[in-house]
Amino acid sequence: MNTLVLAAVHIDEEKQWGHYEPWLKKVSPERQARILRMRRPADRIRSLVSELLARKYISEARHIPFSEIEFLSNEYGKPFVSEALSLSFNLSHSGNWVLFALDETTVGVDVEQIHPVEELSLAKRFFDPAEAAQLSELSEKQRQERFFQLWSLKESYIKWKGTGLSTPLHSFRFMKEKGEWSFSNDHGDECFFHSIRLDDSHYMAVCTSKRYDAIPQVIVYEVEDFLTSLS
Image (cartoon, one colour):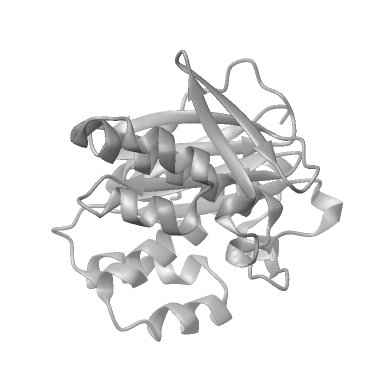
């Protein structure tokens, strides 16, 4: 492996939890127990598919069995694998999508479903004032789409940092001028971003330590095809 990997699984809402349950044996007993404690079937499915995605691509990248992959987490809850594997991964889910990124340097990824919210109110509360000002200049439809594009970019950065929302969303900013995004932050970080329209109602963003002039195409699975690929 010498490049970024991006993969996304589209979940079938019509399938019940029992359809996915046989795949539990592919994950650790601890993870099985955690998944089964989740009350909502949709949460169980997303959690299971997330872990299977990570195990599949880490296993393929380093030629090790599923069962030998051990996941750890930092003080903020960001998962990682042993330094000996020289890999960084990240996961996100929103709507019917589960998203995964894998790289040999630190990576963060996020997917956001576009839906009605009070964009300006949220932006003024959480974002840098300059970001909120740019949003206020857009039409209602443009503002809704830009808000979630911006949110996915901001989430990908704090997931790259591995600090979650302990890093204030107003302490860094994405500005769009003449169709190009620029990034600045109060933390001295250097990282690189790509924003992608995953489908008509979802934006995704990836934050990398390495500069990629072009990122690889997202590997997209319907959930049945993804599960079949694990057999």
